[in-house]
Image (cartoon, rainbow, N blue to C red; front, side):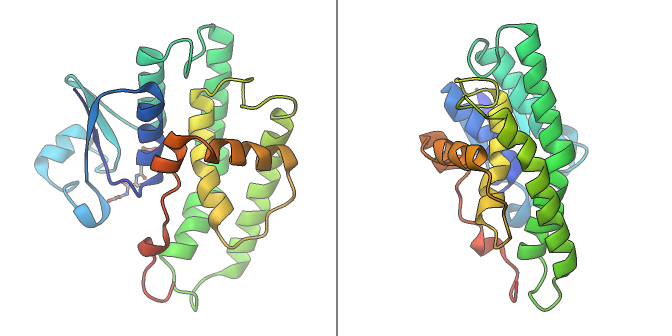
Length: 214
Ligand SMILES: N[C@@H](CCC(=O)N[C@@H](CS)C(=O)NCC(=O)O)C(=O)O
């Protein structure tokens, strides 16, 4: 049995859960992190010494880092679907997955999302918010260009690259920020939003995560 540790409001858990559902894997998810705690226990430290979520346990194989988890599940259970069978297309997935976590994520999550959820409106640094929104929009112009002429990042099939990048788009599109007009990226977000697995695991309202005054 596949076990996923992590609360469903965590964007990094959402990425793994979306992959799990697209792959149709039997699994159990155990709430951990945030209000559920557990990550500070000795047992959790053995699963993930970073004490973060998610962690997966696939029949005794333990793995942390959400992109690594999504990639492992795709390569193991989705070769030819979430993981393209050719090495070049798999490498292109890796490229966009690495881009999502190194280029897009820092503005969308630590700068923007944290500012709207964990900082009160009175204390919010709007110069920082506006700068991060501008950078995210500029970076998403690269995605917009990549999506020209096809439905998903690599072509017309959903892959693990879409799962890594697409998870960030719900946060990006639901925060009160300025967004440039990017027709391909907007159509792509609508396409993802029509998928049941995306609705179930990614489109989770985050308003209740706000601290008072945020
Ligand atoms: N690079 C890691 C980041 C993991 C991470 O930052 N997880 C957050 C939730 S999104 C976390 O565990 N926060 C502490 C908590 O939820 O208790 C990954 O992609 O898995």
